[in-house]
Image (cartoon, rainbow, N blue to C red; front, side, top):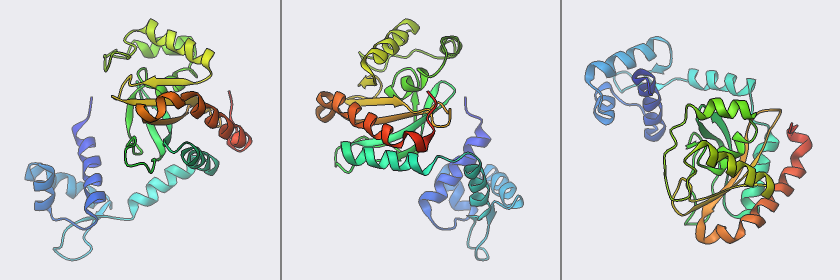
Length: 248
């Protein structure tokens, strides 16, 4: 469930990130489809709090540097180690496929760092991209780090939607897949959530955080390479193990 006011603020930031220049109240209202009164209230509140300013008189509003200072402080308090970013970059280069680190948010997995493949046909993914935790290799690599009791609690909140013929649609099906993954040595998705997409994932408990490393790409290129991709990932994780302080 989304809280509209919170969603509007995020939508406004994404609007400015794409626009890259100031916008008037009328432009914001028209572009985002907001009632003029709603736009006025949101813009006025953010401007009063110092998060928006007018670079030139009557030329529109733009996010102030206060956003970066607040976000920077948050990132510094709970950073993703530089070694993790190097790990993702190396795995992406070695496999040639989109590589990401995912973390949990409720019943979803969310990408917190991504390096996209350079192939014209590739898995398009950005930081902030969300996936159902039970229906993806990323999510299941995170679930594997929960205790059985924690998983059962989480399962009660999940709507086991069927996204494809291979989607696990029950608690028993997800648990069975987790057992197969443990025996196999890596988590795999074969179009379980996204059509024609293969995902290969490993748990990545950096400093005890429940994270996952995933490589994903089109089935025609990755299905036969899943074992090879997993081996490449494992070697890379081993190289960075000490720097990442992995706590299995």
